[in-house]
Image 1: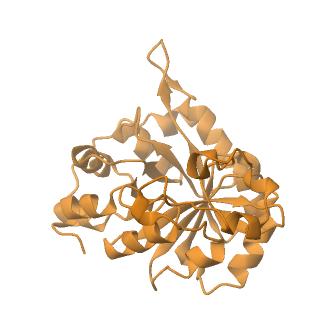
Image 2: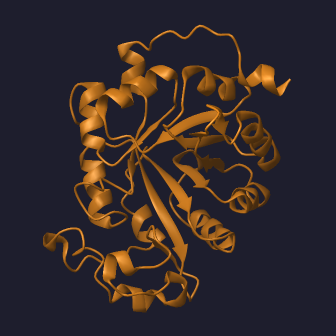
Length: 270
């Protein structure tokens, strides 16, 4: 039965211009080509460029605060070889998380989850990627419950199965997507196998998956959708590829250049 779901013999039609325009564009770590990733300047630029949602990465500090940063070790951003989990929020806030990108952003501080949420306009969304382990989940849920966010504005994403399972167990009404990526092995087969991914989605109780664009076909995308799961894709910065993926049926495009992608699919940057 799984094989039938994942390899249906369907004919795929191209999307209309109207459908292209309606596909949500998600700013990957904010407008991260224009400003340092996962910082307030990047998120503010994303909103100015018309992004429908932002995606941010989150870790837990030594004093159980949630901060927005991609790497577990902050060496790339600050030249200090230290783990986020080994520093308090106050210690992290003393460091410069902007100069590495460009000197005009010198002095930019690491943002907290609360500070990121405060940038979100009404009706816009946030894709919250949990980079650390499931210990972050109860702290995140507490902060979400005490925020102004509505459920439809939130998507929790993670590569970690235990994180997705923890969210589903604690607050099943929250939308979650499991992150993975397909690669083509030496035999020309997708790895992991689509049937394996489907079983994982079923076990986790998640709402969908988000993958890299490598190896995607319209048949693959539609097979997961027919099984009841949403299909989203990252990180797409080339306009022809973005349009092709939308034609395949993906349900959002995550990109480092939201303004450029929006201009291409909607005619103008908002």
